[in-house]
Amino acid sequence: MSQLKKLASQTLLYGLSNIMAKMLNYLLTPLLSYLLINQSGQIANGNMAIIYASMTFFNIIFTYGMETAYFKFSNQEGIEKNKLFQTSLSSLIISTVLLCGIVFFTREWLSNWMSLDQTIYINFMFMIIAFDTIAVIPFAKLRQEQRPLKYAITKLLGILVTIGFTLWFIVFSPSYISHHPESLYTIIIQPYDTTSLLLISNAAGSLITLLLLIKEWKGFSFKIDVNLWKKVISYSLPFIIIGLGGMINEVIDRIMLSKLYVGTVEEAKAITATYNFSYKLAIFITLFIQAFKMAAEPFFFNQSKEKNAPETYAKVMYWFVITLCVAFLFTSLFIDGFKYFIGPQYRQGLGVVPILLSANVCLGIYYNLSIWYKITDNLRYGIAITLFGAALTLMINYYFIPLYGMYASAYATLICYGTMMILSYFLGQKFYSIPYQIKSIGFYVLMAAICFMCQNVLSMFIPSVFFRLLTGLVIFGIYLILIVKKESIEILSLLKKRKH
Image 1 (tube, rainbow, N blue to C red):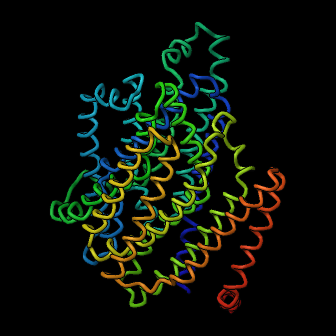
Image 2: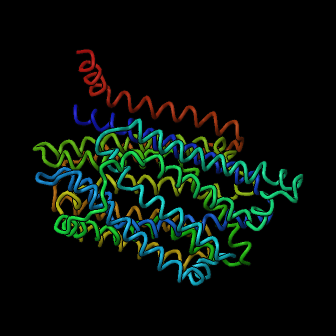
């Protein structure tokens, strides 16, 4: 239990800052969906959905698993941490410069492939990627050294800068330009469209984040220990395949939706923006999973040396799934309230939200399960599982988007993550047996599904928003009471330990 409390505290310390940063970033969702309501605005939102989906793929290539490798080797005996920091960061700097050079000469082809209106989007896009990549190891160092305050401040200030620039460009700048048509600012800014200005805002936030990490470079010298680098790179490179496969599962649906949707280019971008905003309504599950990942990765590697590690992992999974189920119900039962988080023209996609929430539950469980192939160095199985999921995602989206649009993408995500979760469980039990409480976990998942279906059935008889919110409140309360009653012994045990 003490180890579980340790993970919980780390999730709170490191994850809370990430959640706060993401929450601030998510504030841009209503801003962009409400203010950019005309056709050009919808196209801009569609462009941003495609660009950010594409950026996740390039982030994987640019970082090539160095963050995870840093955590693994920083816990190994005989590895000098300062030398590891210098080697990892130097490697990323060199590769970033080389990759950006390749992008510069292929930017027109990339722009056409991504169906973007202007090549300049590529320039801003890779500026952001370069800043974020170089910040990866300094951030990993902060997490490894358990310095949450610096981590939180840096993350939050970067997001605040992005939001500030976005507010200026979208809300205030148009009025300023109209009143000062001949100013230097107007001359500089006018050539850029909405998409470019949003990317500039993000680039500014990423640059400030990188500058705030300058002190973490203290003692850094541009030096690579070749023998150490070979060990690190041999471990990290498979994460490119795992990461790319994971990103295919996570974001390729938006790219394929924009290309395969039956309609005009403008209609395709509008539906992609709608789907992307609907995806953001899974915020509570998404943020919790991200917070958990921030704390869990270094925690799991540290615990792998302990004899009772499997029992600790099982206990973590148990409470993790309970939390995911609560987040699922909190969002799905009160979707009539959360829908105002996005503009009216994007609410036609609300039907996919419960599907995407279910998919994210499966994804969260898979992340938790995947520790077995990381600590046993069986990355080939992680690659196989991820590529199989990617194949499912590509196939379902390719054949069914022309028929069912965004619903095909949502179900493809659910089927993919559900399959990966099941495969990872059975393979993991074969190579690194963990005593998961399958029956109890299944009970909570089943009860969450029943609660959701009950609300939908009742709403068929009384189709009132007030009634749905009221029944949601009652059902959610019942589910929480169920958890407290079922886990009362362990909760009381925890409280007694805290008193002593």
